[in-house]
Length: 177
Image (cartoon, rainbow, N blue to C red; front, side):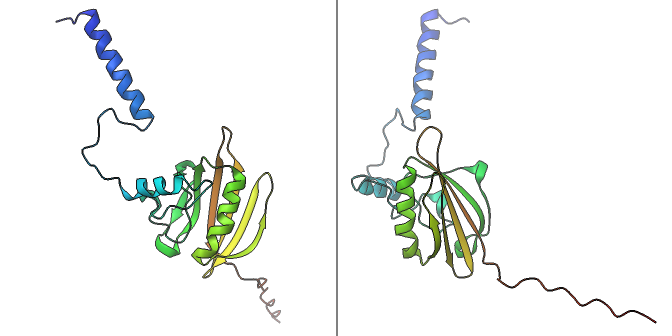
């Protein structure tokens, strides 16, 4: 049975409205819960402080990285992320996308990393800024670059601290007579 044209139009408009709301992260249906989750509460509390601030409870996707500060509103960029391990012994590269500008992100990491027991090795504020810290036999290198449409692309690379000893050459075997 064919539906009248006005019913098709109404169905299409409702579906478009619903999909548009989903794409923006909003819901057409009010939540049955009256309390906010911990991440929403932390974001709301930090919103009035301005700048990039660390939320007290990182988003669930960042729970496996308890040894680094996560800026509010950060999203993991899976195309730039490869991580091995978890907890305080993970290694690899973690890509983040933030809405904060690169200067705010530089200041955020300079301020927050020491509270996670990271010790600064060096930092350079530039069009592409780099910060390097060390902690418990690991080194973190943070690259900050402005994103094309605003915000900052953050790349955190954590690796084991390498030794400063140059490789030695084995002595040549004695000639056989």
